[in-house]
Each structure stands twice: as structure tokens, then as C-alpha cells.
Length: 72
Image (cartoon, rainbow, N blue to C red; front, side, top):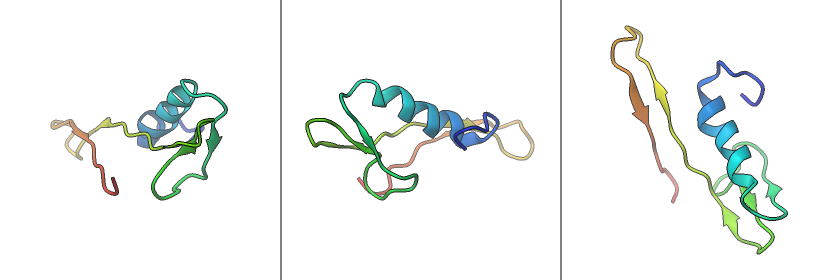
């Protein structure tokens, strides 16, 4: 996912986490799939990044956005 730009999660997860982590000082990244949060900032706050990317169904006629907050 982190290197495959064709992967649906690349934009929705990899790019979003990389960009948002630059807004905080001294971030400590958690492993991919860590439950509850994505990194800890210098103020010891746990940050969970939420983003969405467009998905296509098999017929490629009905694009939609998928955005789910499952644990917060």
C-alpha cells in the first residue's frame, strides 16, 4: 500500500498520514493497522487520521466515496 500508487488505500491512507504527520512535531508512527490511532505527537496526544477515497464498482458506472469511522 505504501509504495503501490494503484492501491485504493494509497491515497486514502498512505498519503493522508504522511501529509498530516508533518503538521505535528516529533511524531512517532504506529505500525500499520494499529487499533485506535496512527501516531503520537510531541504533546503525547494520540492522533487518528481519517480520510476517504473514491471507489468504483465492477461496472465502473457508480463511483462512490467510502468513509467509515469504526472505533471512534
